[in-house]
Amino acid sequence: MHNHAERGPAVPAISRDEVAHLARLSRLALSDAELDQFAGQLDSILSHVRTISEVAAADVPATSSPNPATNVTRPDELVPGLTPHEALAAAPAVDEQRFMVPQILGEGE
Image (cartoon, rainbow, N blue to C red):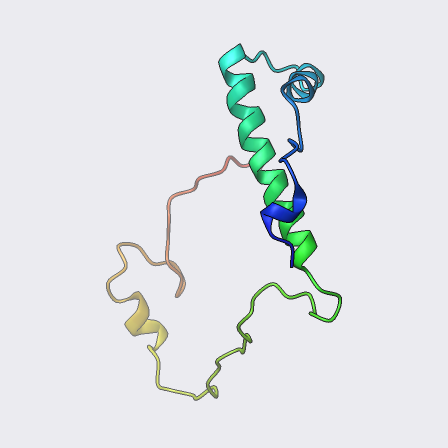
C-alpha cells in the first residue's frame, strides 16, 4: 500500500479549467466560486477513487457487501382466515360478495 509521502506533491485529478469545460458541455452556468468549490469536491472524489483502485487487490473477490446475505424464510402454514361474509361485514357497500367502491376511471378508460 502506498502512503501519501511516496506519491510526491499532490497533483489535482481535475483542474478548475476542466470543471469549467464540463460545465459548458453540460450547459451549466457556474460562478467562479462554484467552479472552485466543484473543482475541489471532484478532485477529492477522484483522489479517493484512485486510492481505492490502488488498494484493491486481484485476489479479493468483488462483492456488494462484506457480510454474507442469507434469505430468512419460514415455512408456509395454513391458518384460519375470514369467511367472505366476515370480510365484507364492515364494508360500507357490497355487491355480490365484493367490496363496492366508487368508480375512478371513465367508461372509455
